[in-house]
Length: 204
Image (tube, rainbow, N blue to C red; front, side, top):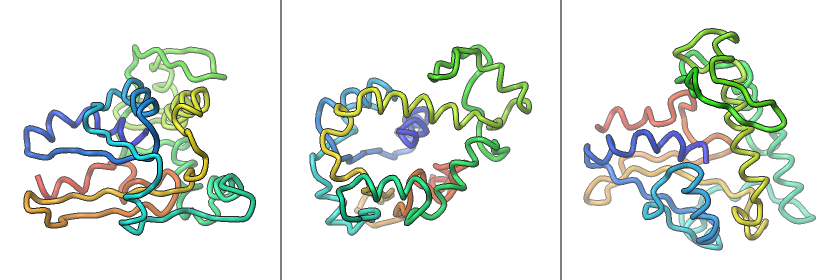
């Protein structure tokens, strides 16, 4: 979800530069529809499969697998076990990041339960503007988490694959592989999380 939200503002620019974005995800049509409604990601550029068929064909990380179903492994991954870099990324959401862009404009109404609603200008008090302020990313993620947990069975029809990791591939027009990032952890969808699309700079 967070990755799609980073992509959406760049889609028109990428399209004008000849880059077509296509996302393949685990789930069903109802989840895809809600995901696109929430994030603004184009529905026609999201293809869903109820099982991680493509993920398996690509040999992507299945995540931590333990007895007792998918949840024990997932919860341990949330704590950083078998998910390198997860805790650092969580902490970055609270400490801020001067290399990352600002997420909320001053006039944005921020609604992220259980926090009371407030205007984005509150983050200015935590450190200024023009960069990702302390607690800003954590609040953004809380809002996303509320959306997912409040509609869990729409987003996740089956819990079996909640630890499955994804990847990013950039292909040339002849399908030559130009770049790849294979996710190793929760929240780690880019080599440069402060600027997750920075890998494109060398190609466009």
